[in-house]
Image (cartoon, rainbow, N blue to C red):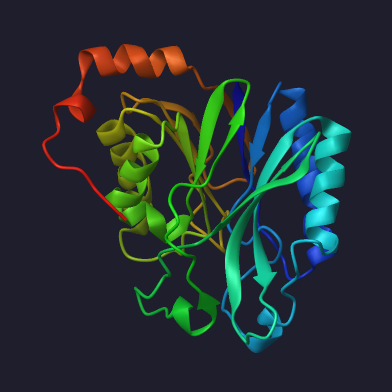
Amino acid sequence: MKLSICQIVSSDDVGANLAEIGRVTEAAAAEGADVAVFPEFAMIGVAALTPEVLAQAQPLDGPFVSGLAQVAERTGVAIIAGVLEEIPGETRAYNSLVVVTPDAGLTAVYHKAHLYDAFGFKESDHICPGALDGAVTFDVHGVRVGLLTCYDLRFPEAARQHADAGVDVIVYPAAWVPGPRKEDHWQTLARARAIENTLYVAAISQGPPLGVGGSLIVDPMGLVLGEIGERNGVATAAIHPDRIAEVRQTNPSLANRRFTIST
């Protein structure tokens, strides 16, 4: 299975963001991608969660997700993207990832579990945390993909839960906010999650100035297979379950562990 990381900078124009996702997905399709992964809040650029931004939240059957489904059908590429999901009767919204596939449309939804109440931000004032219902996954050509978001990267238990669920690649769409040592944390943690769980990790940030950029795909031994710097674009790599099996023969750390996690 081929996976593309798609680094963009979302604006406050939802329609323009959808058009950009369409254009970039076509570029990923030209590279043979089966899955194209876009950043957290790909639907609308979020420099701050203001009332004006929250007012643009949409339901999952709204025009943005429906538009993603049309792009997936047109290009033949499954799309993962961050959306601001409306919650009926709530002033807050969900920070969601949606998966839309060419054949089935909306296939999976993940609500961000760990809210970014750090580095001077308070995401929980505006976003409802997702329920802890276990790993959210979907399969593409025999490869199992797991969904986590941004700040989730700092919580190794979340990634380990996905390893226990048989995931081959964890995707981390993000709007990784610039700050002290943040680029170093981003790359170090992405590689650590791959190495400690002996699986692939794809970490996709909004580009500068909204995020740090530096999106990357890491293999189960910690090798960087594809990377995007400060400029937006696409990087594509093949995800091989056989590579995971090979690495786990050499480094059977999951089999050797003496502690487990529970939800």
